[in-house]
Length: 152
Image (cartoon, rainbow, N blue to C red; front, side, top):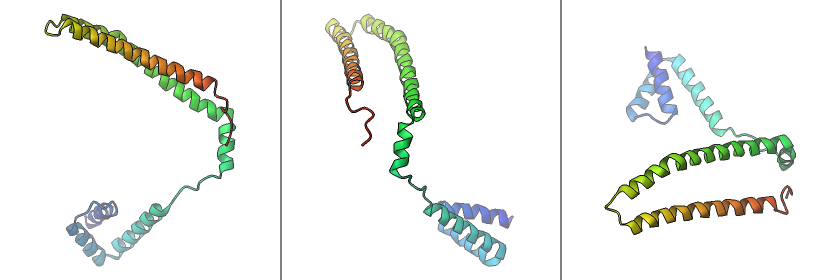
C-alpha cells in the first residue's frame, strides 16, 4: 500500500500537481524506505534528463535535399489538395442545404422589411463573388510565379 501511495505521490510531484502536504508525505515515506528513496532518485533523474533533451536540428543542406525531392513536395501538395477538396465539398453541401432554408425563413418572416431581405441576399452574393475573385487571383499568381522552386 505504501509503495503504491509513494508512486502516486512521486508522479504528482514530478508533474507539479502536488500540495505541500503531499510533498511532506512523500518525503516522510522516502525517509522511512530506502527502496522508495532510490526509486524517487531514479524518477527525478529521468525527469531531469527528459526536460533537458532536445532533437538535433538537421543542417540546412538536409532541408534543401528534402524539399527538392518530388515525393516530399508531392505528399504535402496531396495533403493540401485533400483538405481543399473536402472543404469545398462541405461548403457546397452547406450552400446547397442551408442557404435555401435560410432564404425561405427570411422571405417568410413578415417582420423583416423587403429591403433588408434583399440586402442580405445581395451581401451574400457579393461575399461569394469576393471569395471567388480572391481565390482566382491567388491561383493565377501562383501559376505565374517566376521564382517558384528557387532555393534561397
